Image (tube, rainbow, N blue to C red):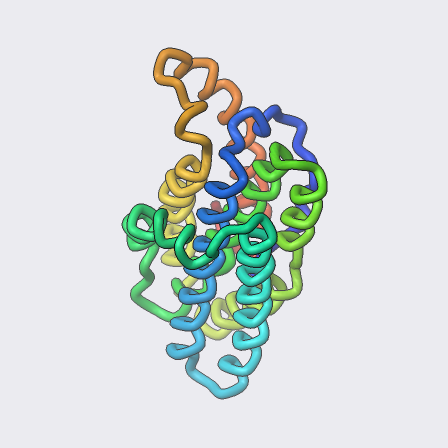
Length: 226
C-alpha cells in the first residue's frame, strides 16, 4: 500500500524535535496501521473479482505485518499494545472517518494515497526516537510491495473506465487535506506550544511540502492530476 521511492530513513527537515514520547508515537502509529488494514479489508470485500480480492489480500497482509511490527515495539518497551492504542483510537477514528470512500476505486485510492503519505511522515517523525528503535520502525514502514499491487489495480480500473479519472483525481485532492490533519495529530502535543506557533509551522511546512510533492508523483504515476 505504500510508495517508498520518494522517502528515505532520514529527513532534511528537523521534524525530530516534534517527535512524541515512544509510547505515544508507537500507540498512534500502530493504530493507524490497523486502520489501514481495515480500509484494505473493505476494499477486498468490495473487489469485483476473485483475482482482485486475492491480490489485495496480499497487500492487506503486508499492512497487518507492519502493524504487528509496531505493536511488538510497544511490547518490547513493556507496554500492553492494545491498551496503549485504545487511548488514541477515538481521536484517530474521528479523523479517519472523513476518508471513508463510497466506491471501490475510491477505496483503492484511499489505501494507496493516505497510507503512503502517512507512512512517509511517520518514518520521518521516527527519526526522533531512540536510534535502535527508530531504525526498526523506519524499516517496518518502508515496504513498497503492497503499494505496487494497489497502484496496478487503480491503473487497470481507470484503463477499463477512463471516465473515472477526473473523479478519482478530485478524491485524491480531498484526501491530502484530511491526511495532513491526521499527520499533525501524530506530533507531540507537549511540543506544539501555541506561543511558538510560527516556529512550529516553519518546521512542519517543508515536510508537508515534500510529502505533497511525493503525493503528486504518486498521482502522476496513476495518470491522475494531483
